[in-house]
Structures are given as C-alpha cells and as structure tokens.
Length: 264
Ligand SMILES: NC(=O)C1=CN([C@@H]2O[C@H](COP(=O)(O)OP(=O)(O)OC[C@H]3O[C@@H](n4cnc5c(N)ncnc54)[C@H](OP(=O)(O)O)[C@@H]3O)[C@@H](O)[C@H]2O)C=CC1
Ligand SMILES: O=C(O)[C@@H]1CCC=N1
Image (cartoon, rainbow, N blue to C red):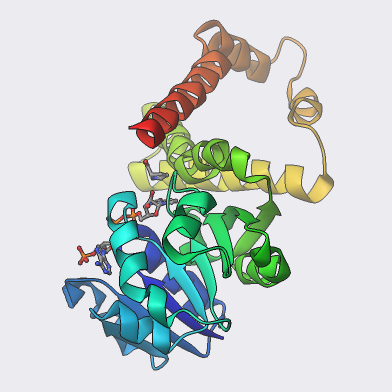
C-alpha cells in the first residue's frame, strides 16, 4: 500500500508510527510545511517527506488527511485536479463533514472519515469510520487499515462528533484518570515511577478483562468488592464525590464544545 499522510503533526505522525510498527505500507510520504520535526521518521527506508502535497498525492493510493480544519479546504483545492479513481481519501479532520468535502472535490471519489486517537502510534487506537456513497466500496479496506493499528467500528456519520469525544478526546480523559491514580499511589508510599507502572498496568488489565471476557464492568466490580471490604469503601467515597457524574458531565461538556466549534 502506498500511503500519503497530509499534515504530519500530532495525529499524522502518530498514524505514521503506527503504520511503520505494523508494516502497514510499502511506501509512505509525509507532508507538512516545516519538515524539521520529521528528521527521525525519515530514517525509515519506506518514508519520504515533502512540503509538496501534490507530489505526495501523485505518489500514493491511500491519502490520509490530518491537518487542522481551517487548513483543509485550501489543501483539498490544491490537489483536487490530480485525484483519480486509485485514491482512497481518508479524513481525520474533526467536524468536517463528507458533504463539505464533496463540495470541494465532488462526490465521485472514495471518501472515508476516520476518527482515531494517538494510541494509533502503538497499534492500539479505537477508530470510528464512515464513508460517502462511493466510499462504501472501500470501507473494508479502511477497516483493515485501522484494525492493524487497533480496533475499528463503522458508525453513521452523524455520530462522528460523539465518537471524537469518546475516542479521540477520550484518551486524554483516561490519561488523567491514570495520572490521578498515580498521585494516589505516591501518597500511599510508592515512588513516582512505580506508582505510574501500577496505575498503567491495572488500567490495561481492567480494559483487557472486559474486552477478552466480553463482560460488564459491574459484573467484574462485584467480584472485587468484598462485603465490608476496602474496595467498596473506596468506590462509594468516589461516587459520593461525584466520580461517575463528573465523567459524564465532562463528556457532555466536550460534546457541547465540539458542536459549538462545528457551528462557528
Ligand atoms: N491530536 C489528536 O489526538 C487528534 C486530532 N484529530 C484531528 O486531526 C487533525 C490534526 O490534528 P493534530 O495532529 O492535533 O494537529 P497538528 O496541528 O499537530 O497537525 C497538523 C499538521 O498539519 C500541517 N500542515 C498545515 N498546513 C499544511 C499544508 N498546507 N500542507 C501540509 N501540511 C500542513 C502542520 O505542519 P506545518 O505547520 O509544518 O505545515 C501540522 O503538523 C485535526 O483536524 C484534529 O481535529 C482527530 C483525532 C485526534
Ligand atoms: O481537542 C480537540 O479538539 C481535537 C479533537 C479530538 C482530539 N483533539
């Protein structure tokens, strides 16, 4: 697969690392205006970098766009005359609808919207995808690309904003929970490095347990909470302080904000 990543910033570079670590491409062209941050990745044989988006598009079949929303229309306009039927166009751009893409390049292209997160760099992204009518013929290819770097789910386009909050912003929410657990562990006497190790691997174990056993969180919680024990004391105090409520409110605030950004 010949892949171009247009806009190798935080997310674009994470995707590039994920593709490299899973041998997901035969060639990869990364673009940005200032190439100085791409020195390390250029050392990989299959990677080339350029400031020329047209060159990247001409050399590739799969085009992954990871620029800021305000930059996207201009870049699409710049390359639209060299888009052909070999190209699958994948946009990770928040709040930028398929209809707006079609307004610029027309509907006769394989268009996919994808919402990954930065764990794609280590092959562990939860990625939601949807497509335009023509892109439905390439959705299995898109799923295969993202399943190599984690787990994908096809959703209706009108759920992409919600998916952005839960999956893309969501990784930051989980990081904060891991950080808070680390701070608690330090207070209980572990040094900072040990504390983070305990928090990260416990978090990983909780998610793996649910994924691999197809179980419900409360079912697993019931197995841990000894009557009159320390777990239920901790959990109930967290709930008195509003743990679940604050997470839900944070998610809704994030969703309200993303809808505001889309309007404005
Ligand atoms: N960060 C995340 O976790 C996630 C981000 N997203 C979405 O992905 C997109 C990118 O986000 P993020 O990576 O954080 O943003 P960044 O600002 O880190 O990356 C955008 C990149 O685009 C490059 N760029 C700007 N103009 C051009 C151009 N004309 N040609 C080529 N490259 C260009 C910039 O580099 P330079 O200035 O050198 O050109 C920059 O590196 C956004 O739309 C965001 O909403 C979606 C999911 C998760
Ligand atoms: O914070 C943001 O707005 C973007 C979208 C999801 C991740 N980063």
